[in-house]
Every structure is written in structure tokens, then in C-alpha cells.
Length: 201
Length: 178
Image 1: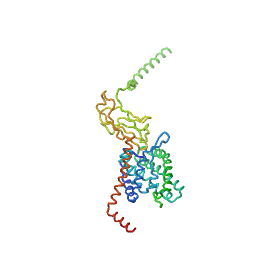
Image 2 (image 1 turned 60 degrees about the horizontal axis):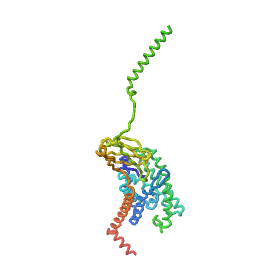
Image 3 (image 1 turned 30 degrees about the horizontal axis):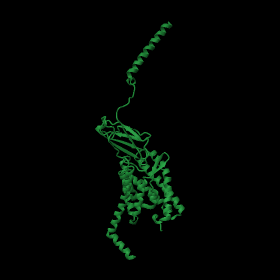
Image 4 (image 1 turned 30 degrees about the vertical axis):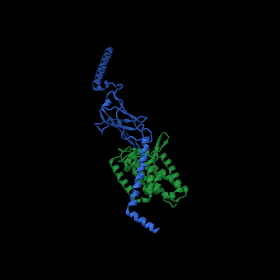
């Protein structure tokens, strides 16, 4: 889901830096110091998840886990995903430094949207409701992230809307896998460590 | 009478054919050229392009830029089924080969062509791939380094917090309250 260097127009890159800067600043403001280790854990998971390849028929893709990260961290997903993307760009050459803003906006916004839409049913609902909400959060976060990537590509006149539609369609199988992973992770955390999800133990 | 008439018609038709043929030949000199092929003895630079998942970048748009003109492409086309693309460098210097796919992935290889490349002794160009993805042990090492950096940031922030007077005051207040 990373956009690489040299593809987007300079105006889009600049807009990405501004929006991502505001998002990360807001996320840091909302991050309690006691939650920092949790943010680091989630950031590490996101950083490493990109190395896990999944075979999907003739092609393959890699995990992002933005849905569960959004559900666990809430607003703190902004700095967590930003740091992980920065390290991925520097160490793995995924994405890039100039395009870091746009990639942060695409993925972190999807993670926080998952938190805002599905956070409440995950925390206060029964185990079944939490599992189904987490599945929907994982699935829709991937599609929203892919849609944002497609939107940035379309705005840069790169392949226009056809590319965006192809991108979203290609991420449906990954969304289903991430939805299942999110449902498993959230159900496990709700049973064993509900405090991680912001619930009283 | 009929025979005389027939001969003159034949002569007129023959003359018209000769004139039209001559006119066509005179106005379209390109039609006189043919196109052929021969095997080239020039050395090519083959490159393979792939994703971080290991999948090859098959049939993707590829552009080659020469060292002298970094804006206008020297050659363009698509990678083959196996993500490969070849070009024949025409001069020394750094050649760039950029591959884009419609999903926003881009990789740019930077190929350094030295003087040796054009002599018979050298077989392979000294090539460096600028956008290449680390693999194997190097990838694992970088993954460990990344996680280490994240937790070093946490350690630094925690250390800073414990040293700051404000946090020590709040902890004292908490202790008193207990």
C-alpha cells in the first residue's frame, strides 16, 4: 500500500506533509506517557508486519494490520504509524522519505477511522459483537487506506480513476485476511488484557 | 477501322500506365526502401525488477534515461513476464531505468557504465540498483535495527521523564497521597 518516490506531484507531496504533520502533532498531544510502550509495541508490529508475505493466487501481498493498531491505540496510531513508515523507508526502501507524509495520511487516517467507527462496540460490546466489529474494522481500514492511496494517485494524474479502482479491488482479499486477523487479536485481548483496549480489567 | 481504333486505345493505355508508374515512383521514394534485421553484437544490460513480496514486476511500464538527458527517455517499453528489461547503453556514465506500476510502486535502478563495459575483456557492467530491497540476513538485521530504534526512542522518553523535575514532583505527590 506504500506509494513510492517519484510518482506523486509536488503539490500532493506538500499537502501530505502538512496533513501528516498536523495528524502526528495531534496524536502526540493525545498520547499519554503511560501509553508510550504500547505505542512502541504497535509501531514495531506495523513495522514488521510488512515483511510477512501472503500468497493470494498468482500474486502476493503483505500485512499492514492498520485496523487492529487503530483499535488499540486510537489517536496515538498517527505517531506510531509515522515512525514505522519512516523506518520502513530508511531500512527497507518501502515508500520513501518525500512521500512519507502521503503514506502516513493514507494508512494512519484509516487506522484512526477504524478506532472512531468501531472502537466503542469493540470496548463495550459482547465478545461476538467485538469480534464482528474488529473484523469490519480490519477489512474497512485496508479498503479506506487503499482508497486514499488511489485518491492521491488520481490527484497526481497517475493512471487516473482506473488505477484507483484497480487498487481498491486488489486489496479486497487482503482486507478479508486483515479482518480475520483483527477479529482474532481483539477477541484475544478482550479476554486476556482488556486494559490494552482501554477497558477496566 | 476497328483494328486501327483498338491499337490506338492499347497505345494510349500503355502510355498512361508508364506515366502513372513513373509518377508513383517519383513521388514516394520511401516505398523503394525495405526493412531488415541483423543480430547485434552490442552488449546489453539486463535488469530484473521485483516487489518486496518477491513477486516479479511483470509487464510494467519501463523507461531508460541516458546520462546526458535525464528528462527525455532514451528508450521505453515494458518488462517481460519475468520482470526483466534490457537495454544497450550508448555511452559511459550513470544510466537510470525506472519501472512504474499503476498501484503507485516505482523502482529506479541506477546503472554505472564504465569504460570497461565497451571493451571485450569485461563481461558485466558495474551496476548499482538504487531502489533495491534488502533480502535475507541483511533484511533480518535491518528489521532488528528498526525495532531497536523504536524502543530506544521509548527508553529516551522514559529517561527524560524520570529526570524532569515536574514528573518527580507529581510522583512525590502521588507517594504522599498513598
